[in-house]
Image: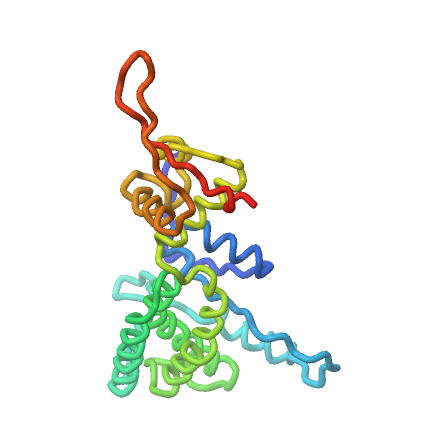
Length: 258
C-alpha cells in the first residue's frame, strides 16, 4: 500500500507451522470461508505410543536429492528465454484424474462449510503432488528426468490425498464443517457472552463489522436462527417523546450468559 507495485514471476511460497487443536478450532469458526484456508493441508495424526526410534532419515540421501533438484534448468524457447516446462498427463493418468474428480463430486454432495471448500481443492492438490512425486523419483533414484505424469505418479498422489490428507482435514475441520449461518451464529453468541449483553440491536452488531455478521444480508438469517433456538427474542421498543420509528431490539436469553 502506498508503494509502487512489485511483480515477481512464478512466485511460489511454502508455509508450514503448528497450532494447538483448541486454537485451530476457534480460528476456523471465526473465519470467513474465502477459499484461503482450503489451500492449507492440515495434518492431525493420532497420538503414537512412546517408543525408541529405530529408523532414521538419511541425511546423505536428502542432501543428494536437494542438490539434484537445485541443478534443474528451466526450459528455453527459440529466443533463449527461460520458461517453466510443461508436463502432460498420459492418457491413463488422465483417466485416473477423471475418476478422482468423480469421487470428489460425490463427497461434495454431503459436505458443508469449510470442508466443502477443501474438497473442491483436492483434485488440484493431487495434481501438484503427482508432479512432486515425479521429480522426487527422478532425484532420489537417478532416473531420467520426467517428461510426463504417469499413472504411477498420479495414482500414488490421489491415494495420499484420499486416504491420508482427507481424513486429516475431516478431523481438523470437524468443528467448522457446519453451514455458514451456524458458524456466524456461534460468533454472535461468543460476542454476546464476551460483552455480557442482555439486549442489543442489529445496528450495534453491524457497526462492529465482525466476520460473517456484516452486512445486514448476512446478519438477518443469523438473528432468525438464534430466535428459532430461543437464544434471543425480538421486541419493539416504542419511540421516544420526540417521535420517530420504534426500534427493534433483541433480548438475550439469560441462560446464554451462564
